[in-house]
Image (tube, rainbow, N blue to C red; front, side, top):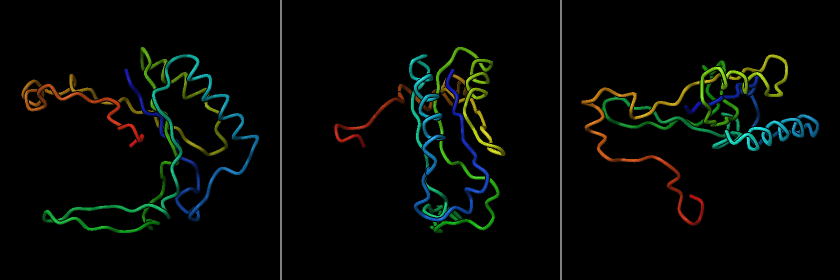
Length: 141
């Protein structure tokens, strides 16, 4: 079972462009946690995200895309980073999330990743033999 653990840091919705972690002790704790995920063989991917002030949203109306640059006034909680893990159960995912070295008022939202096998049979037929996976080229993109 794959789960995405989404980090929701308090106040990140208002962070200035270029905001990055600046507490060496907190980063050290986080790296130890990341290494424990890796050593346990459950870590598939992880990344931190730049703040919304550096992002953009593409919305669609009547088939026409519209681009709006961040920050986004209506945002109350935003994702600051994530881990993608593969574990045997929901309970194991909960345990990994509980071990994360988060600060006060920070949240980790854990969501199970959908598998094509979760979809109804008629939808699976439309998927065919399409397979997901690491599709990056030699340049890492």
